[in-house]
Length: 151
Image 1 (cartoon, rainbow, N blue to C red):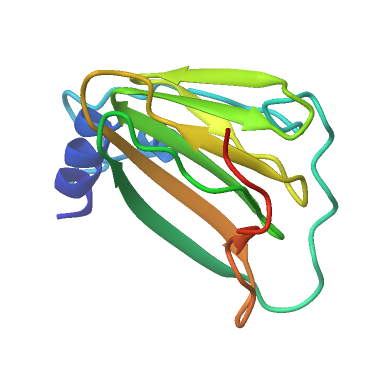
Image 2 (image 1 turned 135 degrees about the vertical axis):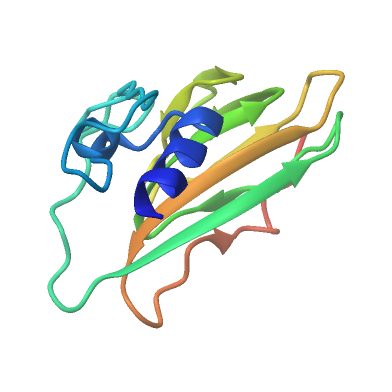
């Protein structure tokens, strides 16, 4: 069953690096399982080093976001480390300093931590983005900044 689940995940998103170790029930490598490492880094998309891990019990959170074409997200920051895979569309992330990163379909992105930014779907189709947060119980995933107007 686990091998079947890994095949679905790997075939759809291509993010599970543990697929290299997936085994069929007989202990042999699972047929048809392919693993593609999309990103390995210690920096966010803007080149800033990620913070050290927090102390305490971790809480891992996975969130699927869907943004219509033309949608702008408000200014916000993430107090926890997070990364994701864009599975449809194109998302442009803009830092308060004006630095931009456009993430394309199939690409991985590591978000800024404790740095205010926002995102825009400048494309012509909805964005579907899977984000994975390395958090702890009670920690906010994002803090909104409605006091900062979008241009």
